Image (cartoon, rainbow, N blue to C red; front, side):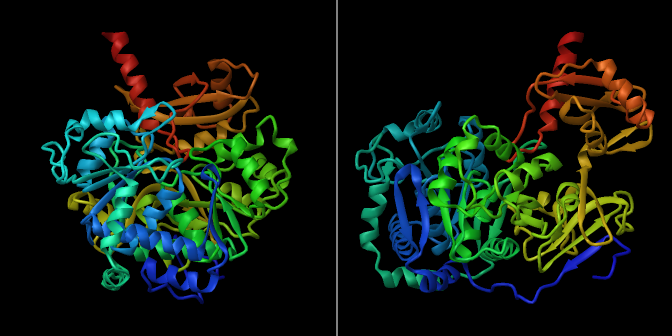
Length: 569
């Protein structure tokens, strides 16, 4: 390609965008790959071919129609990874119902927010997982569920909610209701009897590729999550073109270690695999490195996705050396930067020689950038690759809004099929995120290279302005990583009465290492500009993070501000 001079890149393709709805495309895949395995749910000891999966999806879709759900309604799923989650994902799309993904780590207050924000009309949930008692939290929010009723649920606090359906992944044929006001999976299956195949086909035929079918909540690195509305067109094409980037086909088997509720799991694992006739392998309900390693071996998986911390946990497991992972070929690592040493170990010790680095955001369906199988080590550790086909990206000045020259820092903006429909029920926030020309403003800062590869330098809201100097936390973090005693670092700002903001660094040391604040500060003073040297340094064992491995700097900042208030009070 011709080297770029301005930070704008459009990736062309000889493959056109898919114009189908999700059920239309999966029907084509099923016709071609009917006898191949589509999903293996190891915790449930279940295996389904594409043909068998289609039968179960249709049965559930008819059950939802029989329960009174219709196109445009919203059904929430509050659960860990299991086969029923995947069935519900596909069945709701088959009838135009919008699936609302709810984080299984949510507590009652967060669940209430999600139910109200998306005006959820039906909720599917498991009874409990580990220390999370979902039923107890639900009953606290909805005491009406204790009352017997042959009618849909009526709650003043949650006026849209009509049904709560409980299912146990280990006993899907349960018939006893936990409380009189709840329904169970078997009730939905019974309701399917009242809906004919012809009636289901008639509903599916009314769907349009631009219909919304999913609400994802943003991962919460900067405060209250927003409800991102995504369509058939958004999700199917993002999954399919990601599969092309991985050179995925029907013979591939993807071990899914990331949660389904997140775009990484739902789109870049489930839909990515199903869009090309590959197999979705579910190793565990919630990430467990040992179960992932066991599954890769037992199922001869060819691909493994994850965030860097997941790969680190797998490599660091005490039993790692006994596993033959030679079946692995590829995968996507995303959510945080990949250190060169981690990349080396993943390619050599885990045999993922074609591992790709991905980048994106929920509002972009989610993948915008992906490295290539032949990308260099430097490109895979210092950049996030090139944007996917049929996507535009540009970097703009945070002051003028104009496209910046190659090599200069700018805000990353996206335009194309993958941009969300908007934030559900929040036109004002949507208008702030997507400008009149259709560009989605990511809030991320980056530098575009002449070859189109993108390097992320930090978050716009995290940019520190100290005494008029613009400071990019990622630059300082990258520098701190070069200290032999430092394993990882997070840099952010705190208010300062004189400079406006001051630099703060949280540092996690290498195992067994010891260092003082003065030692780290002298290291900085000798190598970087004085205004970038952290005023405060804190050594920590762990960082607050999202499930996808993103640092929650707003929580770190809040913790330090609260400590300051307590000290002064």
